[in-house]
Length: 273
Length: 364
Image (cartoon, rainbow over all chains, first blue to last red):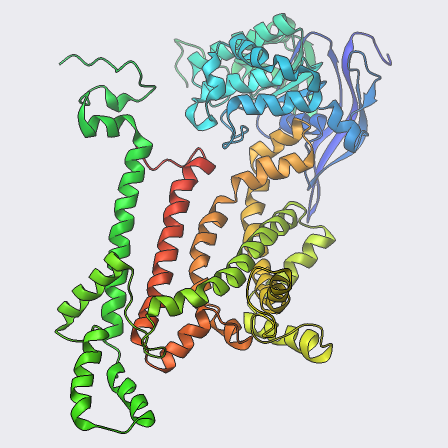
């Protein structure tokens, strides 16, 4: 089972807790999960199920009082030696970021630096990890923006001049700027209206086709997973209750909680009782 | 009325219906210029208002400067009652004290605006007050101005690092030291410095602005002497100023650290130094710029004690002497200089802020 060539990420027994005065609160309680190269893996679950904690832990952005209590996360970036994401430190981790492991936050959050032009926020991360591309930046940034359906002039704008949907697309373009092995997307469609959500989902699917990235999409919205994901993992109270092919999970959910989640998707033409 | 957008204009909805020619059209096409003009107009009004208030306020002071002058003269010359009536009238005219208050005000403003003339100084009669002030102004700007700028730069840098590395030992030391020392008055630190470096160790001079044996001029000896004499008073201001800037910068810095864009910058794998300067500090230093502009005002009135203590020939010393002698024109002149400097500094900062932060937009 160890080091299956087709896996980008192998999570084993991951445990994350938040320390409080009254003892540790377990947010992630021993998760085993493989992410296959090139797939879109959906992580589903209600608020407080631990899915965002899982994402921050994998991204190594977990802040006190959160701490990883155990487990291993083997990461297999293409052309580099595999590393345990929970053990890399300092410079080794910093170099790994973005070029191999990138992050797509929720666009409605203020993830873009308000005082930097959009193109500057592409530039700094590209030059940090791939300084050789300095000369092609003038062509690269408009191309990346075009990939997510934005005009080149957006590069000259500041974040406060963009709408929520535009910000989400900018973040998507930045996320794939260095063709990372894995993009972890935390609620990429939350707080966008449904028409924009659809467009964003389509763009995410296109990014996979165009860049061949592996996507891990965290969302509470089962509709997102139905449209986007190849496989879906359902979390409940810090545990994985079900992992499987998206069709199989929706058609024939094995876990009662998964069934409830699917049934909670609002359907048109049916009154809430 | 067809509303075609003028071809050379970039993006602005408000231009569609604006007339194509004339001043208004030009202003609507150049919002920054329109803002600058409006802001400058406001500056002139503020300046006029403040100078006017200062003028009338000082006329309310009890005491008659001319009587004081006459008394001084009496001590030196034989008293001549007949001549003194004429003399008083002449002095009244020269000091701008004849006629009613409104006439005095108009004459004062006319002289000030047209000739930059503040009237004769009483203590240095017949030297004009502006000459007295200009003599001491370079010392004040040199000592207090440079110290204030240095304190700001040190304070913002150390404060940013203290905020960034909060929880670490070095940060805790800097913070607690700042809390303890930032409210200690300048002169108290100055006294300690004088005791240690001038009195006990005898390393540095504690009085005057330069060695009186050296002729003032552009020479290494003189400049060296000025630096040596300015070290202790300057140091006392820099030390205390730095501590208070550390505290306020740290306070601005800490809430920024929880922002999403800092987490994002970390996820991007940027170097810490870059995150600190371009992401954290860049988003919180604006209030410090404004605060610096306002603090410039204290250069002209807040550091009287430091200048007194070191017998430094700056504006503060001049002001104290002028107040003791009821030297109207000099007191008012120093006040006018302070008003002018603070308002001008705030004007420049207001015009500068939109360039420093893209989110700042005063114009529509």
